[in-house]
Amino acid sequence: METEKFKLSDILYGLVIPLIVGLLIVAFPAVIRPALDGWFSPGDLMTGEGASAYAFLTPIFTHGFALMVMFAIPLILGLIWNKWAGGAAGFLLGTLLYLGEAGYNNQFTAVNYGMSVNLYADPSFIGNYIVGGILVGYIAGGLSNGSLNFKRMLGAGLTASLVVGALTFLFNMTVAESKWMSQADPAYALFLAMLPMIFLGIIAPIVAKVMTWYGLQPTRR
Image (cartoon, rainbow, N blue to C red; front, side):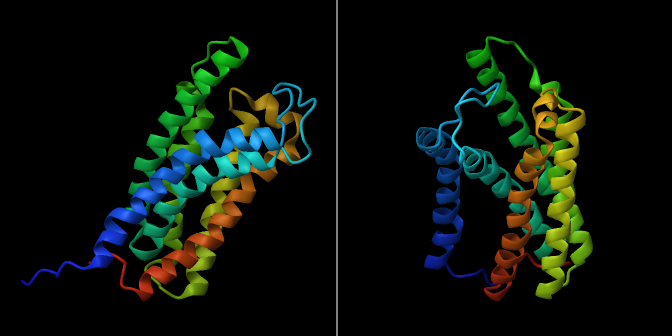
């Protein structure tokens, strides 16, 4: 069987794009978040006093972006491959994000509030990232069921992302260690949980469809 000849596009898709995505994931919390905090003051982290009216943009463009990247990969794999690939990718990426987010927030709480917490045991972290990652890929793949019709892909992607967004809001309101923060302003908590997922549900199917135009989907067996 003749192997594919090496092309410049292999470098683009196999090296350049993954590196750019990886650097962006690091840049958003490490570089962009401090800049946004400078422009839009977060105010008192406990009471919100002194916060800019646009402080809500910071978590959307940092935490929300990270979630979109993490959920986009299993969602796209579910659409262009199958539900099992989407669910498996969601489990792997969701576990990595769960470990990173829990570790970061443990340190953040200790440094800023002098409190020792173990967010690795927080049910909402497990539900939001690991369970959410599995579900977004599996639901998208199950609803599209191999169809490359864009309307069906869009419907499947939006449904999967909205379901996971709603579950995230539910977990944050009920079982999260910091549920009091969401309960203090449920409308804002719902906004933060759903807005990135709405964008994800629209953008990911578009990316998946474009990938099929260039033959960038796995071989179906």
